[in-house]
Amino acid sequence: MKQGDETRATVRDVAARTGLSIATVSRVLNGRANVAPATRERVLATIAELGRGAPRRRGERATGIYVRCPYVLTDYFGLIVSAVAEALEPHGLQVILNAGVAAQRDHVLTALTGRRDVAGAVLILPPEPGAELARLRDRGFPFVVLDPRTPPPRNLAAVSAAHFSGARQLAAHLIGLGHRRIGIIGGPRDWLAGENRFAGYLSPLADAGVLPAPELTRFVAEPTSELGHRAAAELLDLPERPTALLAFNDKIAIGALRAAAERGLRVPADLSVAGFDDIELGRACRPMLTTVRQPLEEMGRMAVHLLLRMLGGHRLDALHVELATELVIRDSTGPVPDVFHGSGTGVPRSGTPSH
Image 1: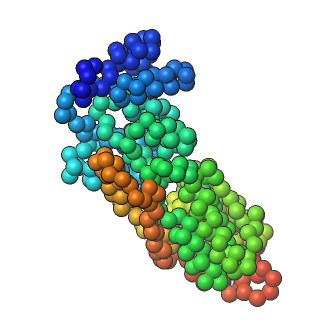
Image 2: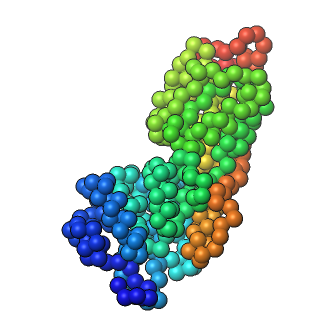
Image 3: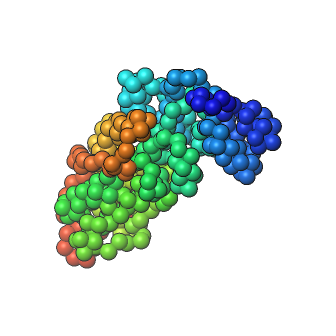
């Protein structure tokens, strides 16, 4: 490399400096799994020393933004990715998309610093641990985490929704309707959103003097309608069933609606059901779901805003941005049935609708 040129190290430069083959360096840059961790770190450290990656001509600007969303692009993730793409387009930046469940097995973050076509990244619910995200940040690579899966490192840019306060409003709504025996179907235990929503559901119960009942709590490994159906069936088959179900998301709540229908329970006359996210599916089902609306598209736009400021060399005054959620009351929640008022728990046996 010539002194003073705005160039980047080539693969050949990195291979020569490390004593590794060009093929090995290429495997690291492409995120291949068949590379020893020590070798991967050695290559990445050398790239950082030499100037971050492949050569770039003077004045040339990378226009790619790497958007990693290793999930199926449904109406939840699809809305976020679309909003990110639309927000980038006016700035002449293009999406380089890494999506689909299979992408969770890709080791792509370590290779981003070596890509000449990538200016920065938006990482949506990244499965990588915080330590790996911190290493990417420490190499000077600009990126924003959207909807962190785990608590983000303190000095890492992140955008999320107000999961706790949204869940708290939803649980308070049910308590205001007279419900006290409330079943909770929580999301994955290792998701930050799952932890915050579960805490939000418990908070109004504690305020009402209701201790959490372990038998009324279930957690699912993946937030799907099928697993929601299974968890709801277990709760509704209890000798003393809940009068309401709070679900981690709308898909789980839709599974709960199916479990209730199979047992002859009317929603909301016999059982109230509430979700979270306000996806289109929750508005298409009958009854329509009471839920919490996440500002999914605004979250995507905010992530792009933060990234653009980073790319422009501006200081970020707020690294962790939390956007407000909104309680949306629809047809799936109603007052606790009269039979539940009065003596003891007042809960009819499973499968016996109240009339």
